[in-house]
Image (cartoon, rainbow, N blue to C red; front, side):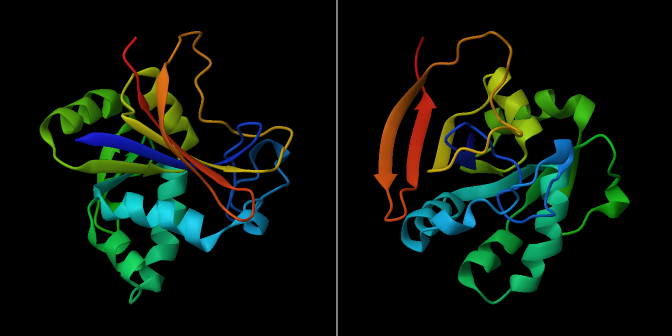
Amino acid sequence: MRIVVIEFMSLDGVVQAPGGPEEDTDGGFAHGGWTHPFFDPETVGGAFNDTVSKAEGLLYGRRTWQNMAAAWPARAGDPFADRMNAMPKYVVSETLSDDELTWNTTLIPGDAAVARLRELRDTGDGDLVVMGSPSLVRTLLHEGLVDELRLIVMPVILGGGKTIFPGDGLRHRLELVSATTGGTGVQVCTYRRAAE
């Protein structure tokens, strides 16, 4: 199973609260919903549709999972939403319990996450897709568990906020395999792990 990460990102690497003002205000972040002016349905929507159509499951950190589980079931009837709702999900969390889970979700305890994700990656098929979840993605990148990174880069600098990139001092070499530019200036860049 490949682990594929897809992220909205500003030019300065910020991924925090792309969807709305109240999504994630940690650290006093005041730019929630910053992707809206640059959302190109063909380019950005196409990237998400392509990614989700190849997915066998979705993987989230707790906060992103809670936001997604609250929003997507109400969108049933749309082919993209139906696909999102139907496939299995996994959430990595130290605080959630099994009885809080909805939306076809399996809990992966945070202290067992790396080992469990290595096991899933080694024994599963298809793509396990991660959206948002910056803390989880940082860990996955640090551990060398990301097979493909799809960055939806918006032409805006936010001046600070959460990022997915590890500050571990290690070099992580990637290979650009595709790049598409939309009419709003958004770029979808797909990278895969490169041989060192």
